[in-house]
Amino acid sequence: MTQIITRFPPSPTGHLHVGGARTALFNWLWARKNGGKFILRIEDTDVARSAEEMTQGILDGMRWLGLDWDEGPYFQSQRVDLYNQHIDQLLEAGHAYFCSCTPEEVEAMRVAARAVGAVPKYDGRCRNKGLEAGPGRVVRFKTPTDGETRFRDLVKGPVAVPNTQLDDMVLRRVDGMPTYNLAVVVDDVTMGMTHIIRGDDHLSNTPKQVLLYEALGRDLPLFAHVPMILGPDKKKLSKRHGATSVTAYRDMGYLPEAMVNYLVRLGWSHGDQEIFSLEELLEHFSLDHLGSAACVFDQSKLLWLNNHYIKSEPEDRVAALLADHLTDHLAGRGLDGADEAYLRSIVPLLRPRAGTMVEMAEMAEFFVVEDEALPMDQAAVNKFLTPEAKEHFGRLRELLSGASSFGQQELEALFKNYLEDQGVAFKVLAQPLRVALTGKTKSPGIYEIMEVLGKDRVLRRLARAEQEGAGL
Image (cartoon, rainbow, N blue to C red; front, side, top):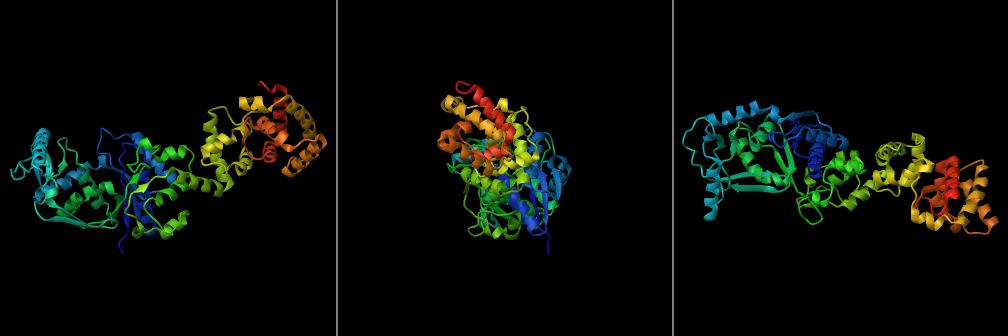
């Protein structure tokens, strides 16, 4: 049986886009499911627009998603000699020719064609001149002038394009650099690709590449063009819709499991199942179930998935992620005694509420900052830290300082006795306590917070609130 070989060939002209990440994921899954090979290739022949930091960003995004590769990354800029060998082969076989037409002359041909309702393309005037290599000359492919170019797409079905619609495409530019279609085909041929899974924005290139395969005497791989990812307005996903790069979502506090799970469902399905472990994806993924309709990127659904993974991942892992995001959130202010065990105790209180790890870090700030540096909501301070509340804080500090245990049940019993003794309802103290301990009016339960903060922190914060109170 032929070994399955797939690839992901991003261009380092931008960060790893979520659409590219989905393409990489589909190729990775198909190779891994079949015990095949997944190759990473950097298409950097556009030297002016390629950037090393973008390449690094792509690699970082791939690693974050867990998409490891078996070979590469290969760089097209280092394979130019190989491409030129294949161009020379096409010239020798009569499938290509030199062209001396200037860009201005070619544009004039297209304008003239549009004027009469014809396909705007190069008119082939150098096709039979027998020109040789020379300054200012490109190499063009000799596209058949009749018939159709056909291929079967695993998503779109049979595709046929009249050759009269196709141009005599440039294979080598004036500067000696190969063009995209030539380099892609040579790479896919020499690397033994069996499956080309990519976005359907590449569908228009496929007939041109099929002709190159045939001219080089090579068998076609299997093509699968997956639908584009659209924004909520049903237009191509772009920055105007929000973050589009994988690393941006990482920095926003999304988990890679959530991103992988979400991306795989954009254009692929397995019944009605929405949540997949990696093991389930490797078991069920199939090219037969790739959809043909465009997909809408739904931020709210991704957020829902992310919350699911935040709630279901082991506490140790979430605590480690929380530590990283707290470091960023506090921007050098430091963590006050927030060791690994302390952060683990915070996680159960916050993860049901947090859509992202950034949100969890924001929620967790009051747990870890120094007591005297606790940010306070001034409006909440003025409303709830009243003289009456301060009197209760003084009495409570005395009771709490003598508590032998600081667990939730013991704290609840202590407060119950105190409230009965004072003849007040808990709601009278709930918000003042919450503001004193957290600096804000929304938080997990009071007893849960006190247990995690511990006796010393609670006493210090009550003392601060008692001393400063209204007008703080």
